[in-house]
Image (cartoon, rainbow, N blue to C red):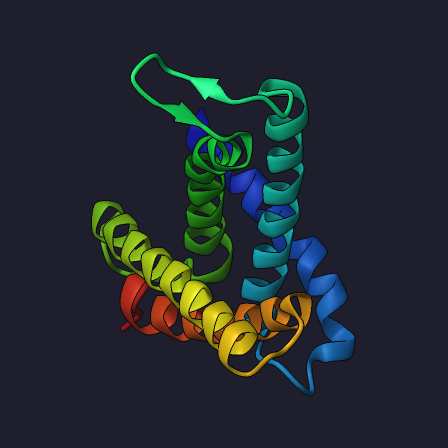
Amino acid sequence: MIKKIESKIQKFLWVVIDFFYQPFSKFFSLQFFRYGFCGGLNMAFDWVLYFVFYNFVFQKQLLDLGFVAISPHIASFIFKFPITFLTGFWLARHVSFSESYLRGRVQIIRYLLVVCCCILINYIGLKFFVEICGIYPSISNVITSIISAVFSYFTNKHFSFRQR
């Protein structure tokens, strides 16, 4: 039952993404476009979840666990991260890199390693561009996001979801 639902969602996403691919076909491979589309979709989902957690779940208040208090922006990140991690993994596995021969548990561990590297790239990139180069933070964020996305695509393609 779940496999049928996954398959229908996968096919639906392929139809939608492939429809928008036509004008970009001269610039990107279909796989790269699918990966970018899914990444953008997951990023938008991430933003919405963060907004909901920050404003409505934690109501901009500290999360007091008794032994530690967590700021609402960090608590929101902690709670939305596993959700968007899993949706990002599912999209990468079933939509972008569906031809991988690796087992699912190998893929998810490798995917987690890539995500951790991307978090590190974003942290180092922001520190470098903002604090050393003096570039405005929003522009620095865009630059590091592009670097991180390109890194993520190639490492996921050749490591997390390797194909024969």
